[in-house]
Image (cartoon, rainbow, N blue to C red; front, side, top):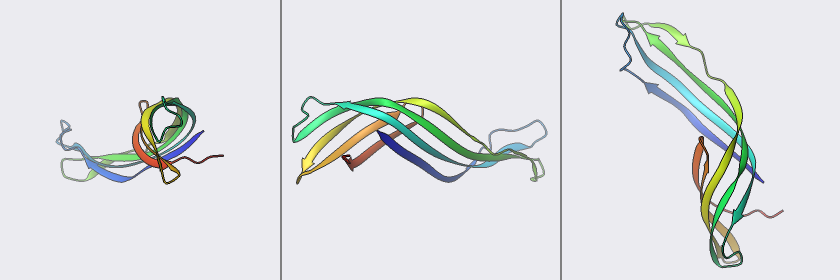
Length: 132
């Protein structure tokens, strides 16, 4: 089982290269994203009981995404002429693929893993296993 989350702080951006015939431009905006995923993964390793063991991981995850982004058009005189509405959210199913290395250190299992939710997020993590 897998439960994960991703949060990006508010970011401001500027796009001064988009100019309109009246001299105005689409120049500024803000955005932030939050993702919650829940899925199932499995891993295969050539040495399951070894002190050091590489592995590959694959599975599926259901993602729920909340995005808030907005931007505005600036008139030639510098005033904000209109605003684009904020973003929304969505959900979908993504494949999970990755590879990692398990190492036993002082009786504790540590894992270094690179994982990608296809078409969405990539992560490199360092952690330990939680047994149920």
